[in-house]
Amino acid sequence: MSFLLDDSDTQLFIPEILAMLDFDKASWSMNFVKEEPLIVASGNACESKPKMLRPRPASDTEAKSKLMKRKRGTTTGTPRLRNKDKIELLRHEIESLEEELEALQRSKRKAGVLTTTQKTSVWKGIASRQRQERERAFRCNEGLKKRLIEQQMLTMSLSGVLSEWTSLPPPRGPK
Image 1 (cartoon, rainbow, N blue to C red):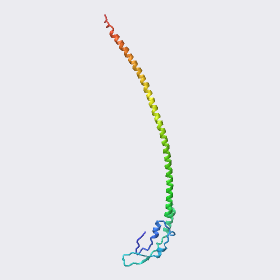
Image 2: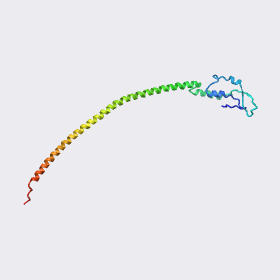
Image 3: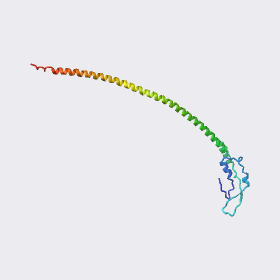
Image 4: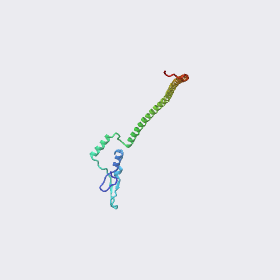
């Protein structure tokens, strides 16, 4: 694409710009440009020749390649149509993301309800384990108390036997 024209270049750059913007010739009239003379700056500022602009002739291969490109692309048409398509796609994406957000919020609410019931059941589980541990410790303490009482009775009886034994006369030796 050429925006600066010199003496040897007699082409029209507006169709190239419009082609970049996906305008076709039917949507943009070029009649007024062909009738206006253009003064092209050359190396010598004193010489200025008016030149008529005309579009560069397109070869058959260029025209075919443009048609093929349009057929291959999914979004053909003007930028306005492409923008409408993009807006529509974004709307669908917004809807799907909103649905996903609602689903996540619902699952979070359900999980919140489950956590309160789980907290209650966890508390009950801890309480029942502590009660069982307390009962086991109580039974163990009762058994230890019984053994202690038995040992005290044994100790008293042994001390009584020992005191009786010390009060006995010493044995006589063999004769």
